Amino acid sequence: MTAAILLAALLAIALWSFRGVGLSWDQMVKGSEYAASFLGRTVPFVWPSVGEIVWLSALTLAIVFCGTAMAAVISIPVAYLAARNTTHNRLTGLIGRFVGVTSRAAPDAIMAMIFALVIGQGALAGVLALGIHSIGMISKLTADAIEQIDPGPGRALRAAGATRMQEFWGATWPQILPAYIAIVLHRTDINLRVSVILGFVGVAGLGQQLSIAMQTLNYREAMPFAIIIFVLCVAFEVVSALIRRSLLGHQPTGRGIGQRLVRRFTSDPEQASVHGSVRDSVRADGRAASGVESRAEFRAGSRAGSRAAKQAARPTHAQLGRAGKIPWTPERVQQSALVWSTVVVMVSSAIIAGTQGSSFANFWLNLDIAVGRLWPPSLAPEKWEATALALLETVQIAFAATLIAVVFSLLIGTFAARNVAPNPVVRGGARFLLVVIRGLPELLLALFFIILTGLGPGAAVLALGIGGVGLLGKLVADSLEEVQPGPERALSTVGATRMQVFAGATVPQAIPSFVGHTLYLLDTNIRSATVLGIVGGGGIGYMLSSAARINQHELLFLLLCVLVIVFAIEALSSWLRKLLS
Image (cartoon, rainbow, N blue to C red; front, side, top):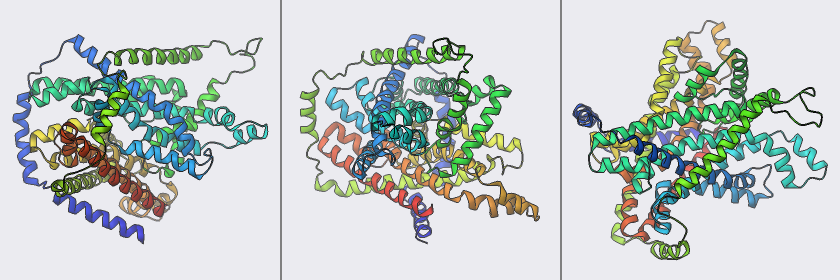
C-alpha cells in the first residue's frame, strides 16, 4: 500500500512538472515548422580536414580511455568494500557504498570545471572528471557481480588457510573477470558520449570544436562534428563487441548498431547455439535486476558467458606440452594480441592526453588557490529564491522527461518484445527505432531542441524524454521477454485473447521491473538535467556554469544542493525497490 501511494504521488508530481516547465503543443508545432529552415542552414556541410578529424578523434578517445582506466583500477577496492560477501564489517561496507554513490552523484561537467581551476583547462581535467564519475557505476556493478559468485572456491581456499586477499584474487576475481571486462567496456562507451558534454566546459577534443561551432551559430561546421561523434560511437561499439566476443567467448547480446553488425557477420551455428544458451541464462537471472542499464549483458559475461568461454578454452591433457604448459593455439595468440594491443593503446592515450596544457606541476599551489576560491560555500541572500526555483525547475525537468519516456517506452517497448509483438516485422521495426534513438547523444538532442524551441527547460525535457525512450524502451522489451511463459500459456489454453494474456499474465509479472527501470531513469535524469542546463537547458545547470566563471563560493554551495537532491532521489528509489521486491 505504501509503495502504491508513493508511486501515485510520483505520477502526480510528473504531471505537475510537465505543466510547470511550460512545454506546450503549440510550442512544439512552431518548432517543427522552424526545423525545415534550420536544416536548410546546415547544408552544405563544411568538413574539417582529414588530419584534424584524426587528431581530434584520437584526443577524444585518449581522454576517454585514460579516464575509464583510472576508474577501472580504483573501482576494484571500492567494489571489494561495498560487496556484502567481501567487506570486513558494516562500517567498511558503508564506506564503499558511500564512495560509489558520491562519485556517481557529482556531475562530471561540474567536476571538470573544478579540476580546471586546480590544474588548468586541458585533457587532464577531463580525464579526472570522467574517471571519478565512472567509479560510481563500475564499482556498483562490480560489487553486484561479486555478490553473485559461487562461494565454493572461496571456502576451499579459506579451509586451506588462505588470507582474504588470496581468497579474492584466487577465487573471486577469476569469477567476476568476464563481467568486469564487460562493465568497463560499457562504461567506456558511455564516457565517449559524455566527452561531448565536457567539450562545452573547456575539455579539448571533438566536443570542444562542436561547442565552438554552436556558440558561433556556425551550423554548417557543427553538423560534421556531430556526425563524426556519432560514427565514432558506433565504431567503438563494434570494436567493443569484437573484444567481448574474443575474450569472453560468446556473441554480444546488446541491441546497439555495432553489436548487431558483429553478430551478423561473425556468427556461425556453433556460436549461435552458445549465444542462445547465454541469452536463456541471462533471462533466467534478469528478474533480479534493479534497473541498471544493460545489467543482463553484464550477467551474461559473468555467468553463462564465462562458463562457455572456459569450457571452450580449457585444454585437454593431449593438448598440454611435456612440461604441462598450454600451447600457443590461435585462440591464445588472439587473446594475447588483444591484451598487448590494449597496453599499447593505453600508453598511446596517456602520451596523447599529456600533450595538452594541464598538468600536476603546480598542483598544491593551485589547490590552495582553488580551496580559497571554493571554501566556504556561500550564497548571497538575494539569490536564495532564484536558486530554489532553479532547483525546482531541475527536478521538474527530470520528472517531466521521465513521464514522456515512460509513455512512449511502454508503447514502443511492448511491440519490441518477442512474446508480445504481433509479428517479426513489427518487432524488428520497434527494435530498430529504439536502436536509432539510443544512438543519438542527449546533448546533441538538447542543442537541436534549443535551436527549435529556444533556451529554457522545454528543450531539456524533450531531449531527456526522447533519449530516455531508447534506454527505457529496451529495458521494457527485455522485461516483457523475461517473464515466465507458464501463466501466458495457461490463459491461452482456456481461450484468452492476445490482449487478455498480455494484461492478465505478461504485465503483472513485469511490473516490478518496470518500476525499477523507471526509478533508475528518474535518478539518471536528475543528473542529466543539471548538465544540460549548462548548454541552455534551464534549471540549476546554468547557475552552476555562471558561478564557475564568476564566484566559486556559490559554485560549491550549488553543487552541494544538487548532491542533496540526488541523494534524496536515490534513497527514495532504493526504498521503493525494496518495498516492491
